[in-house]
Amino acid sequence: MQSLKLKPGEFFSPEIFTLEGFEDLEISTQIVIRDALNRGLEVEVLDRKNHFLRLKNSNGFVQYVKEASKTALDSYMSFLVMENKTISKIVMHESGLLVPEGDSFGDPESAFVFWKKNSDRKIVVKPVTTNFGIGITILTPHASEEDAKKAIKIAFNHSESVIVEEFAEGNEYRFLVIGTETVAVCNRVPANVTGDGIHTIEELVTLKNEDKRRGVGHVTPLEKIQLGDTELDVLQQAGFTKNSIPPKDQKVFLRKNSNISTGGDSIDVTDWAHPFYKELAVKAAQLVGAKICGVDIILKDLEKREDYRILELNFNPVFIYS
Image: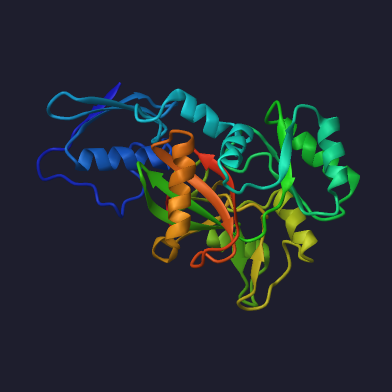
């Protein structure tokens, strides 16, 4: 067990996004350690691999924190409901909140039948219980049966059941709810590069990945953009290869999902968010009894009250801006 406490006058700058000696911990846990120490608390790292901390103040009051956001403030049941995308969708739908149309399935055959009935639409296939964009596939209208079966198989590789639902059009925003307030909003943009008319897409990815904030394994604010099969498939669908040289200022996307964990960008838009959406996020969090929650909402205009879809609730909502 490792115990830390700053001496009087010592202070970690918020501009430092990785803590020396703790680079192996998730970035969210590093932030908790930094802020707790800056507030004069004693921090004990009880289990590094599980990102399990114990915080103590001068009066002996103790709080346990796992993975930065799992605390005594939230019940275990709240965590389980947020973890299960099917259940959280049911809870929100029953309370009148808008969620993507779809269903969950426990076997590949029934999932395929549902997709086939809706194959003229853009469809998302995803595991019920994963995070970080793992196992998610977006199928275009009239996708091939082979691609649909592949997407369903990938999702089942990560979960005992999967969700097949409509693709909600718009921009994706994550609303950070703490207690009864939305304290931050970020626009999550899929992994991308911007052309300069000189470099290939592969070279542009390498240049963008030189940003010190990008790393691998969720230990830095942003993740490096990869050029694996998924990214190459997305490029091919858009008429590019990794050797293409996009024109100056043309944005080229390498992913369809906007997860930061797959190389996406995160832009602070807190001040532009309409109060309706901030209140909506708080209501969604309260429905599952969550005190700390990330609410992912798809909408077309953040500044106007319009149509929306709540994608999911997150129990570990890391907020770092690009």
